[in-house]
Image 1 (spheres, rainbow, N blue to C red):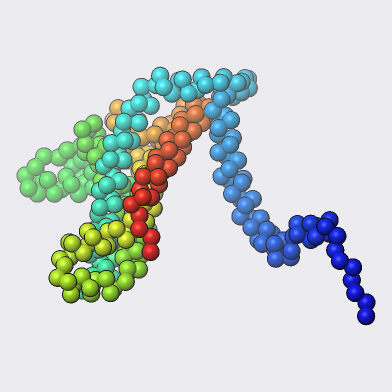
Image 2 (spheres, rainbow, N blue to C red):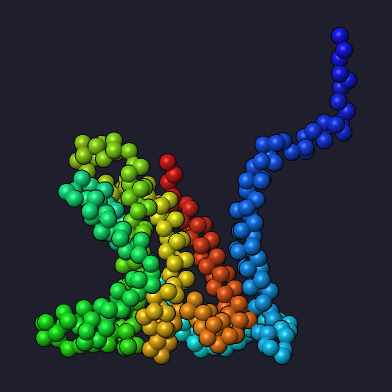
Length: 307
């Protein structure tokens, strides 16, 4: 009987690093997605980072290396600081309100109420609408003299008011639109998480005589913390990437009262054609969002209870 000679150490190493057919097939299946991700995500991000250190190319003048000059111009730009202030106020107005409403709606429709399917659809409908359509709907609401709010005010003897044309109310108006659009989207995540909680926990709370508020505060909400972390990170990102309804409703006005950071990037890049300044501001925004997301994850991770 013929026996094979034992494999040498070099042959064993070669066999261990030789890719199997399963591994090759897996990489081939991932290749299209990885190619698209590299071409449309990673390379644009790297190109934006590189462009932020060069001047904007002109027809008779190519781009030249300027170092941190674009970043210095951003710091010296008063409109940037106003846009940053507006964006912070916008985030403060949208994030807690939209998350709070989403949680409230999810708890409500999770109960056995009559017509809860219709209520879920009513809450989720704004989410499936394009932001441009939402902006036009609310633009009709805010239109002076002819809009829905103006008609309601006139019915009760009130005077018409230019809601989007006043610096005192314009930012509040676009904030309300964002909350109306996002609360239903976040509700879906909370509703899915609530339905994963074992019904036996609620039955035990009823037997122990616990109130609904106590059960929510001590049982449901701690178990919803992983979902809250996910929703919070998404809410922060959404608050700083808002541009659609700003363009449609106010275009940053009046007097930059509704100019947010992403709209300022759009304005620099496509209105003033200063692509290098837009690239620098983009990197500032991405760095800030990354730092905020990391801080949220670090500080909230300790309070999360995974099942």
